[in-house]
Image (cartoon, rainbow, N blue to C red):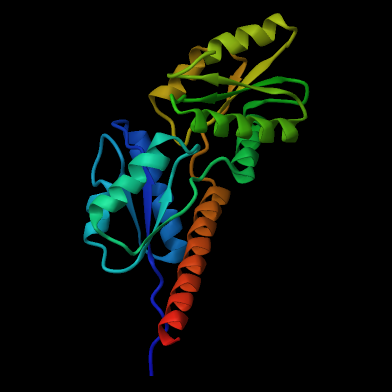
Length: 243
């Protein structure tokens, strides 16, 4: 008689930051996910440790790796797979990144409303920026999602990499007739990048995404979908061996 299969572990992989707010936010997200599905480990592709390869090297069971990124650029497409390969662990399933996703768009709109945004106000979606065209495209997809929810065009402004910068977009919106301009912060956590947004000249800067319950749900859904795929693959493999 065999027991019930043990669920795969979950590894939440983030970029890494020296800002304690960002570290605390990822830890809080992992803690909230742990309440739902069991212990959740955290790894970072840059700045901090452990790296994904270190975390996976001593994994005692199959693992689902969820990239905690709001867009899929170099880190998601290159760094994460390279780290998995370097670990030597062949029992890892990588999920999609967190964004873009309608869940995140709804959180962004909620943050805007809490800041005082009202229908008719202009909106700028502020993202850190990336040299990877795939990541930039994902941010624009999110802007389209937010635009559909607020029923007004949403422009993208970059904080650190890329043009136009957030302050430039705010100025351009005012010049085109917007009476009030609000910034939606497409960042997971507070920190240096978010603080820069207060210098953009906007009428309001929404809080970053943070650990909203719907974001926790999103991580859990990514995990459970991957678990289902791993089990289906295992069943197929078992059937082929019997044949």
